[in-house]
Length: 343
Image (cartoon, rainbow, N blue to C red; front, side, top):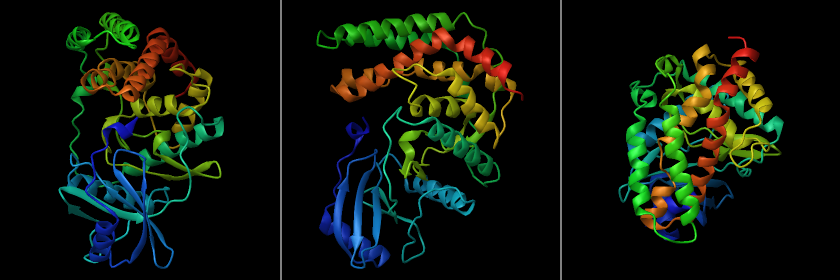
């Protein structure tokens, strides 16, 4: 999916060897491209057989953005959270800019990545545990971000309905025509249904500083356990309930085609609560905040209609399946969380 969003890199083996020597005084002899994530990633090996990862970030991320991520990771590393280890440059910095793109170097992390919805029950609970630990530790982190979360609680569903109506006008006859039309029209119906629900106390949900994109796609596993959690570039304030339910939806093997295993979800929330807190509004609206954000986003469909990306379209269709499940089960999820979890 994410490979469709990669920006073309101007780096090659010769340039990388030169940049690493100039900035880190490390003599690289082997360079291999890794096709993963939205950054351009290279595996490097030096003359002493030490292995590194060089990342060239998309130009939309400033050096300040990347340095913020590095500072968070260094902080969490000192708190014994399993995160990458960045290499300090010769001038003491951790990043540099080349051709308007920020570049970092870190120690290579041995392991592999799980595909979505392949995690065991034990791996699912491990995800909840690390999320709880990260949120707890970041409560003491001295960050400079401002807490601006108004967009999370906006329930102007009419603008989202108009967005889908406009997209429908752009759909042309092709192999996905029928599926796209069904999905877009159904998302409009779901938004109309949400308009009938009272969300006046939605803004009482807990706002926490967190990873921002926490999911199984950001875990590197070794021997079946998390060896590192990566990509904190989206770290920010947000309703922590969203990060909890979203991360659960992507990891557990029993969550198929957008449907959730509710018993597993109760266990996931309970495991998180062993390390960090929630309030009753988090439990009440956890399923709704995820549903609202998914319905307000046309991600996947818009990209397909603009540039023909079938991978992103399929991801958008998966998210619509999540919406179908949540629109029919959100109230049940809320009731079970409030009944089975003591706050």
